[in-house]
Length: 637
Image (cartoon, rainbow, N blue to C red; front, side):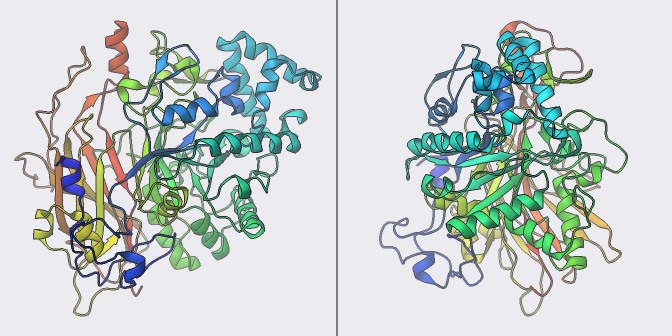
C-alpha cells in the first residue's frame, strides 16, 4: 500500500458521527441521515461512502488566446490545446517549446476574460469589420509585430478598459455571445465525468478606476445547455461587484442553474478588494454582506501575481508572511497610499468580516482559500522546474530573468518577480462538475503554491491526542467534527475548548514538510483585530523557543545546480491541537498552513539551464506551502 492510500484510507466502520456536518450538494448535511452520508459497509470500506476520500487537483483560473490581453501579448494556445494539456497531453507552447504536466489535473476551468472574448483573434487576423477602427488597426500592427509592440498593446488595452474607453467594436455583445457559445462547445467536448472535469467559467475583469484589481472568476455548476442561455457579464456592462452578483442571481432565476464567483489579487486592488464601501463610495450594508457571502464563498489566495494571505507589515510576528509579495501598486503599478494594504489581504479580511458581522448581522468575508496560476499562455504551470510564465514573453528563455512582466510608463515589474503558483485541491466524493462545484460552495477546499500535498483539517470538541495515531484521519475527522470550510457546533454542555485534527502528506515530487501551523484570528472585546500563528506539528527534534516558535528547518538547496535533498523535514505530519486561549464568548476562525522545506525556485532552474548568474535581488529558493479553508467558531451558533 502506498503512503498516500495508507494515510488517507477510510476506516471500515465510521466513528459515531454525532457532530459532523458533511455537504454533498453545497448545503449542510446531518450525517445521522445515513442514506445521505454513508452506508454501513460490508468487507469493502469504500463501498457506499458518500464523502470525499482523496482530494481532486485542478486549476480554476487559466487564460488562453481567447483572452484579449493574452492574444495581444502573442499567446496562440487556444482553449482546446489548454484542456488537452490539463488532461496530461504534451502540447507546443506559443514560443514553440514542448510542454507537459508532471501529472494530469483532475479538473480545470478555462476562465478567459468575458470582455471581448475571442474578439482580439479577429484583430490579429485583420478582420475588415474591425480594421475600420483606427485604434484596432494600430493594435493589429502591434500584435503582428510581436515583442515590445505587442506588450504595449496589452498595457494600453488594460488602461483603456479601466477608463471605459475601449473601442466600441470590441464591446459588441452579439459577437461576445457567439464566441461564448463556441467556447462552451469546446469545454463540453472535454468534460468526461468520473475521469476529468472541464468546468465552464469566465473571468469578469473589473479594473475600477484604472487598474484597481476587482477581478472575479465566475464558475458554473452547469453544462452548456444552461450556460448558453444567458450572455456572460462584462465590465462593459458594469464594473461594480454587487452588480455582478445581481447578474448571477438573474442567471440562476432564469435558468435554474448555479454559480459562484472567486475574487483574486486583492494585493493589486489599492485597498478596494475588502473595503467597507463599494468602489463607487456607498457604505456596505447587511444585504451587501449577505450577498457577498452567498456569491463569493472562496478567495484565490496565491497566484503568479503574488500571494495575498497576509502582508508582513500587518503580521510582524509571522516569519512566513513575507512570501511572493507584490505590494508596490495596483495592476497598473499605480503606487499605494497609506492604509490601502489593510484592505487587501485575506487574513485581515477574515478578521474584519467577524467585526462587520457584529455591526451588520452578516459576515461578508467568510470565505475559503484556493490557489491558481492566472497564466495567460494557455499553459497552467505551477511547478518550479516546469514554469512557463504568465505571458509568452515570460516563457522559458535566457532573457526572461531580466525581462519586464509589466511596464506602465516606466513603472516596472520584472519577470523574475512572477511566482510559479498555485493550485486548488477539492475534497469531492467524485470527479464531476456537480461534486467539485459543491465542494467549492461549501469551502471544503485548500490552495497550495504548487505542490500537491495532501492536507486534512477538521475541528470539533472531542478530538484526542490518540486520534493522531490512526491511519484514517478522514474517517476520524468526519466522525468527530467538521471539515475545513465548516462551522464548529455550539460549545458542549460542560464547556471546553475546540480541538483540531491536522494532517499532511508531502507531494512525492516536491520537498519534505517542515511544519503544520494553525492560524487563529479573532476580534477582542475592544474591537481590535487579533491573530496568532501556532506551530502545532513539525519535523525532527527541534524544540520551541521561549516565544513558542519552532526554529527554521534549514536548507539543503544547491542553487548552482538547482537541486535539493529531502534529508530534512518529514514525509508526513499529523497532530491534534487544542486552542489554549479559547474564550467561548469571542468569535474566531482557524485555518491550517502547511510549510515545506526550502527548494529551488524557478529562477534557480533557469540559471542552471541557461548558464545565468541571477542578480542579488533575485530569489533563488522558495518555501512552498498550502492554505486550508478556515473553520469558524461563533458563540451561541
